[in-house]
Length: 286
Image (cartoon, rainbow, N blue to C red; front, side, top):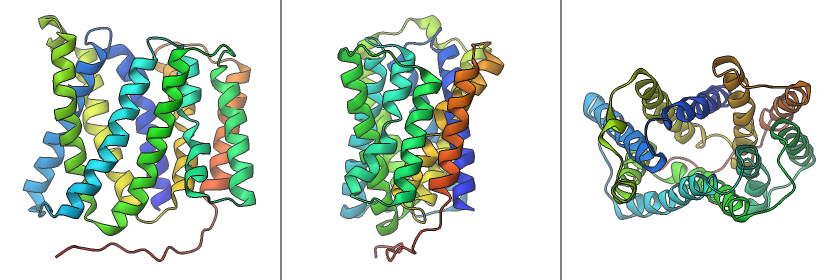
């Protein structure tokens, strides 16, 4: 069940690519990220108020949230800025390299994971067809992949030690505060905030649905090993390519279909494999 929920969440994240691409025609990228996380913060805070869930403020929760937020923030910044210097296909491929980086960080290797990771990497290459030329944007995007991998590793540990909803709220609110000065630096024009249909859809997908997907990740990582989570996330570029092909009319040739198919095969091989039960359990700090 958690794996299927995570796979559905990854589909939602895949949908953020075409939604964001359309919305960025109106709003600058860092401003869009700030508004997106602000909307997510309001949504999560409303859930806390509705169900009367206690927000944990203990030092351990705050420290864990801060550490995870650092990885998340640098992941988004390096990915966004890197896109100014590299192609979208290179960005998609290099970002998804966290599927390799996560097991390297954790030093968890078995035949099934190695096979699935290899298949996923080949599939990603066929799907996005990155160029062989390396530039500053590519280096920054590799840094983004390392940051996102670090975030996945953090969540595996922290969601089993602390209250996951509290970790979620502290992270999205911290991301909003971090992006506020960057929005001021971008100086977006007034028309960027016009509530057009495209912008509203983009914010709904990224600010509401993607925040819900983030919440599912926080829950699922209490139960699923981080390397399997990374494999499931590898399907995100495939979903993004399919949705961009369907809604935006972007081309997807035979090589792209084969690549996306290999990614899904890798997910089925590696992420849905049986794994030994984890000894760690959720701890509610007093």
